[in-house]
Length: 339
Ligand code: ACO
Image (cartoon, rainbow, N blue to C red; front, side, top):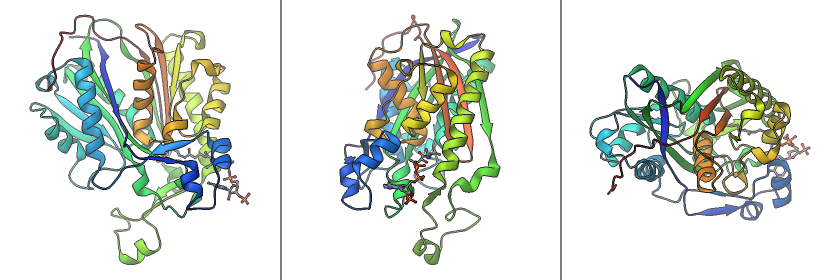
């Protein structure tokens, strides 16, 4: 039985439609200057009619399978991290499994908001390490713009849509997840919440009229929790991996706000040159943000075999998660022409 779960493939997908800060300034009381200086965001991608969560997830998943050169038949588990599923019921993971023609896999959704991908990485790795799975497709995807009230400038300037996916495979070499720390503080639920639409407050015409199905957020409180929990859990996993800050080659943080990323890096004592940032082009893509950043870091040649990469994320719930991974594909991977 292999003792590790290597990341052997990765892929991402974002909608074609670009919405700039100036586009938003044309429809609400905000400005490019305010959004750039408070968040670091310049533009984001937003879905068009007909694009749903599974659309983006399937595109990203397809690319990850091709990158890993693995046949769909070999995937035995599909985990879809999302808080914006196609439908409340059934799980979007099953739709994705069907559309990717993956015949021999279990499939389930996982909701830990923006921390969902790192949560999923822990679950996928545990399944592989236990021997219950051999090859897992893990996708982080959100169409968070569907939860936004475009009249609320406190939230609507922050988010974008997207998907990122990885393939994890059993491996003898020490690669993939070395240590992980998951956290939750449900007492903070009301700091970021879409109140209506679930079983507590089923949708009614009145609730929709009041906009209770949209996300409301206490930005300042979230900000404080995010910096503290991301940096504390990051320090924990670096220590649990037997490493020090100096051993971390790259930090791939959840892309919520540049000031949160800078504050976290400062608390960790890691220079910004070793922190990957792409939120200027995508905004906060929720569960997709970490895997999209992994894809772009790999594309830009910023990830090398045996590099130690720190992932850290924070989201609604409240939830947070940090992980240290050792980068590297399987050297023995057979070429596979994915159709
Ligand atoms: N444009 C212009 N002005 C704005 C905007 C806007 N888009 N939004 C708020 N303002 C105004 C406020 O009304 C306020 O005005 P006032 O002083 O007259 O009352 C002023 O700007 C300052 O508002 P603050 O909320 O204090 O601004 P702050 O500097 O805290 O920045 C922000 C707000 C960007 C939301 C920040 O708090 C933040 O990033 N928090 C974290 C949010 C986050 O990342 N959430 C996602 C978590 S991940 C997940 O689960 C999906």
